[in-house]
Length: 414
Image (cartoon, rainbow, N blue to C red; front, side, top):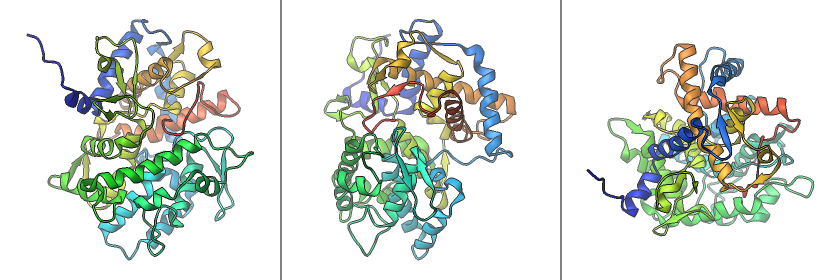
C-alpha cells in the first residue's frame, strides 16, 4: 500500500513540528552510525564518559539537582543580581495577566537578539560595574534596553514592546545601547536590527496572535491561554504558535509555497527526490524562545505538558560538547580550520547529530541518576547541563572559549 505524498501545506506543518526535527535528524544520525556521512562520525563508546561529565557539571551548579528550565530568564539572573526583582517591583501594579504580557514583551525580543555575539564583544553594566559577554551580555543589555523603554513607542508605558517601538531600533540604536564600537564589535549587528524590524511587521500582520489595536508580542499570552485545556498547555502547541507567528522574520531562508520555513536547511544525504525530502528543520531560536515563555505562563497557573516533545538546542555549545569530548569526530581536520555558513552541509550535519546525541545523553544521565523523564526533562538537562558543559570544555580546550567550529553568523541563527 502506497502512502499519498504530502501536500505543500502538510509538508510545511510537518517541518514545523518537533517530530520532524527528530525524524530528519535521526536519518542523518543513522547514516553516521553506519559511517556513511561525509563530514562526521559518531563514537558512542564515549557516551558514559560524556554523561558523567555533564552530571558532574550539573552538580557543581545544582547539587540537589533542583534545576530550573533552560531559558533566557537564567541569563537575566546572572551573578544573582536583583534584575528580576527590579522588574517585578516595576510591574507590581499590573494584573497577573498584564504582568505575564510584559514578561513576554521582554523575553521575546531578547531571545531574538541572542545569536552568537562573537569573541570580542562585551557589555559594561552600569548598575553593577560588571562586564558581560556572549549570551549573558546580550541578555543584560537587552534587559536594560527594555526597562528603559527601548522597545516601547509609549513613554508613559516603558515596560512593553510594540510594533512602532521595534521599528525605532535601527542599527545605530543597537550600536548605542549595546556599546558597539571598533574595539567592541558585535557580530551580525545588521541582521539583529533587521530581525527586530521584521518582528514589528509580523506583530501588525497577525492580529489574532498579537492584537489588532496595539500589537505586542505579549498579546500572545491571550492566544496561548485560549489553547489551554483544563489548565494545561502542550509545549508543541506553544512552539507552533511561535513558528507561525514569527515565521516571516527570518531572512535568507528556504521557502515552500511562499512560506518562509525559518531554521530549516538542505542536506544532500537525505533520501528522496523532492527538495522538501532533503530539508532538515532545527528551529533552534524558536525552541529557545518557547522554553523562555514557560515561566510567565506557569506564574499564571498553567501546567505545561509534553516538554520532552521539544528537542535539545543544536547550537555551538551543545554541539561543541559532543565534538570536544569525542562523541563526534570530524573526518577532515579542515572542518576545524575553516569558517562555514550556517547552511553548509557540514554545519547541518553537525547540528542534526547534536539533536540526536542530546537525547542519548539525556537518556544515559537519567539511567545513571535513576530519574525519570518527568523528574529530569530535557529542558533541565540543557540547563544543568549540556550547555554549561559545552562552555566549560570549550574554555579548557581553547583560550578564547570559542566554538570548535567557526560559523559565519549573521546574527539570526546561533
